[in-house]
Image (cartoon, rainbow, N blue to C red; front, side, top):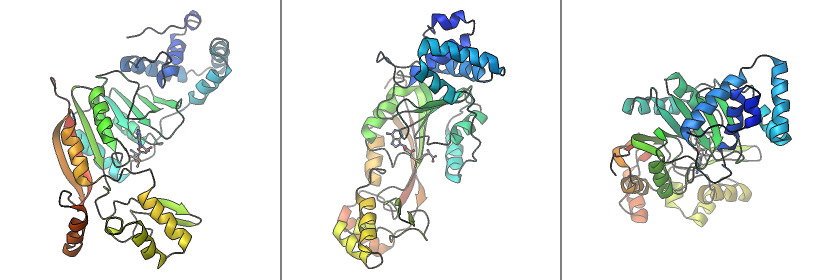
Length: 341
Ligand SMILES: C[S@@+](CC[C@H](N)C(=O)[O-])C[C@H]1O[C@@H](n2cnc3c(N)ncnc32)[C@H](O)[C@@H]1O
């Protein structure tokens, strides 16, 4: 465990502030070293306590001192997270299902958890705290690289790309991925990073859909002018089941032009075939990545089934081969790091 090393702040007789300052470089350690999660856990608890400083004048003294030591920009960043409270957005159904799925495989009480692709709300992190975790860190790529916030004494939300995270080997007991695996482009690198980050016997849990090889695998999620397109709402889904697998780009454009103007049809075709928010992996490719990963597969099952009419099934097989289960729109996957592997 690293000692917090801001002598002037320690002279201020407030070790919380030293901890606060030490947390600042968590996202990109300047010396290229990796973060010790135990340091992060202690610093988070300290920051959270500092956060509850009630006397405004002591906050002012503290901020002035920090300004002297760390400079104006850094202090602005500190101010941004002073006062931030944990969100209480209710869990979406799929998040609730995932957390229940997770706890049916592993006891998370007292565990250290990394949530990958944790999005903006932090509501899953809050739910994990309510279920007794020791510490949960949520990472996602959507914010600036230096973005992070302390949600509570046990929760941190930060920028992070799962393809390369700045935490030490064997850092977490549990890795949680909700609705994220269809969005990550390099599952091979991801699984190696998951392996590196998990402690021996640690568990990786993933629950996700719509897989590219399923009826709604195009995962359409875009707007154009006042039009809204969503794969998960039949009234807002502009495509028929499996259009993205039965037609190529020009065939699909022709089909869509029967219902939409040229600009909208082209926008939709780009969303289906080009948009970078999904990885377009077939069901069998995902299974292969899991089985070939350094982690041991404990559980790999279909969690969302969309029936495929026989005639369509034949056309899909003629076009894409026999390896995938085209009815599999969602999966629940549990892997474990062995003690020796
Ligand atoms: C559909 S959202 C799911 C968010 C959240 N888990 C939930 O329960 O709704 C997928 C998330 O994965 C994130 N993501 C995609 N690639 C990532 C990567 N390489 N590293 C970390 N997060 C990533 C996206 O930014 C996005 O927020």
